[in-house]
Image (cartoon, rainbow, N blue to C red):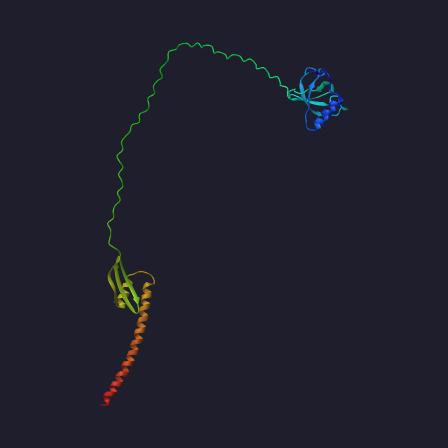
Amino acid sequence: MDAGQGLSTNEVQSIREALAAGRKPRVVFTASAGQIAGQVGQVIELTDPEVSDEFVVVRFGRDELPFSPADLAVAPKGVGRRVAEPKPEPEPQEPPAVAAPEFVLDTPRVPAQRQEEPKVEQTEKPPARRAVKAVKPKGPAGLTVTLAYADGEWTVAAQQGSKALAKPYVVKPAEALKMVALVDVPGVQEAVEQILGTERAEAEQQAEKLRAELAEIEARLAELREAR
């Protein structure tokens, strides 16, 4: 590979057109490039040649450095796209250190004192007695005595549970008043006395009416007797 001649003006123009087309032309470093002479790189950019003679930016390995056209030449076909980077040689590993035998003085082993576990005395507890519920004897069914007033009559009925002991039967007003007097409930006796007072007034009115009718009948009977 002849890497002694640099890039000509036409080659620089061809590289410019290739970059515009999206390609990255390969170049080879000439002897004027120094220690990298003969290596291959890729042109990635052309800067302004009026600002600096090194206006050809070349990617070489991981570096992107500017060079002058004299440092570069068009790479011939068949040259590898990338230059294999020299791999660092593995550093020689030191053999693992062998532990030196440790000198231990023989000392008599003292047997560890056996610790006796505390004994827990178990005392048998008498079985707990179950609480026995006292069974109450079943008492007699409830007794209900009812004093009622309806349609001008006082009645008394007795019932034990669901069994009727005495069907409602009529009692005198005086007996009903005595029964109510045994119940010390405010208002009950007053209510009974009010009912009895109303019945008494109605009975007196009826008695007066009957007396008047009886007087008329007796007068009529006397007239009939005189007519004989």
